[in-house]
Each structure stands twice: as C-alpha cells, then as structure tokens.
Image (cartoon, rainbow, N blue to C red; front, side, top):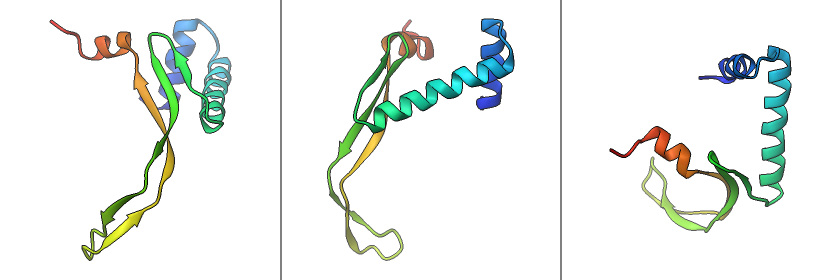
Amino acid sequence: MNKGELIDAIAEKAEVSKKDADVVLTALIDSIVEAVSAGEKVSLVGFGSFEPRDRQAREGRNPKTGDKMTIAATRIPAFSAGKAFKEKVAPSD
C-alpha cells in the first residue's frame, strides 16, 4: 500500500474527503518526524512507538575491497510495533 492508497482507505473508513484525509495524514507524519528528530518518543497505544536511537561507531568492511573502515556513530529513527499490532500481524494459535 502506498500513500495514495492509504489516503483512500482513511477517507473511506472515516467518511471524509480524500483531500481532508491527505491533510490529516500529512500532518500526522510531519508531527511524528518533528518530534522524533527533536529527540522525543512518540507512542501510539495499540500501534507502536517511534523514537530516535543512537548507533555507536563500529568497524565495518568495504564490500569492494574488503578493507577495514570505521562507520561513524549516528542517530537513527526506530519503530517498535505495539502488542496489538504484533498480534494482528502474527496471531498466536
């Protein structure tokens, strides 16, 4: 599912126009990106949480030459699925 298809699904389920669904989805995504990039954790109960995580510097290898190289420390966005989401995707029998 791409963003356009997601907007269509939101518009249908919420019984709003596609334009309104697009505005709401874009605002949601922008708000999550802004909060996580500011170092905050965003938790959506039943869905999951978004948070920044720090990766330590580590040693890697250049795939072409095989030479050792240092991969710099960095901050990455991370998503952890909530319990209800996990159970919906992989129900336990």
